[in-house]
Image 1: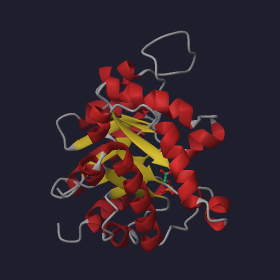
Image 2: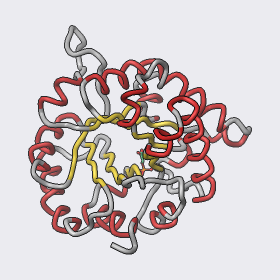
Image 3: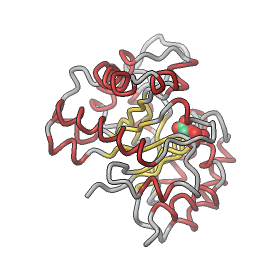
Amino acid sequence: MRQPVIAANWKMYKNPAESVAFIREFLPLVEHLSGSDIVLFPTATSLASVCDAVAETRLMAGAQTMHWLSEGPYTGQTSPTMLTSIGATHVLLGHSERRLYANETYEHVNLKIKAACANHLIPVLCLGEMLSDRQEGYTADTLMAQMGAALANFPAERAHTLIVAYEPVWAIGTGSTATPEVANDTHGIIRRDLEKRFGREIADATRILYGGSVKPENVAEMMAQPEIDGALVGGASLDPHTFADIIRNAHPAS
Ligand code: PGA
């Protein structure tokens, strides 16, 4: 059984006060809903406040990106050890907005993912094809290329910590989601690739999240798919009640 993960990607929204106010309102709404791990990814300047606010709660917190080195003359960057020093436990890597707007390549992601593991941060590797890839039949090739670059020389003994987020670029912030069947099939492609790299046991244990316009209305049908182990939520995670509804609807029985 894979413990589901529902994660909030707050992107460039919410200052520290707004982030802490969200947590105060959100926590009582989800305290009794035990079905998933819940991880918040605030913007860099809010992360320390969020880490403090989630300490001693069932929530966890992580960064939206990081550098791979521990320190150095790299203006504007944050290192893995800086993240762990404030209590962050997770890090998003390879989000398509970072690839589109910050020139992040999967070779960078590869360095970062190895650094995350070396520093005991849980990496959430984001993958996803463009609309043209899907229309032209290149979805599997694109995802395999992304996995190959991101996971090159990744230490197999750390593979059990990896979380993968499948986020088709055409579904992010657009309101159009992949159908549950398409998402499930694509997660299957990713899981088979993980099996080739790390073996059956690791592939079976790895949580693969779906991301791209997840809402309270569509999360249940996504989570009902056998290959979908959670959600990475952008826009719909900014309101505490909407995000709590997503967590409630993800597990209709809880
Ligand atoms: P969205 O974003 O839910 O607003 O589509 C998802 C993401 O970018 O992680």
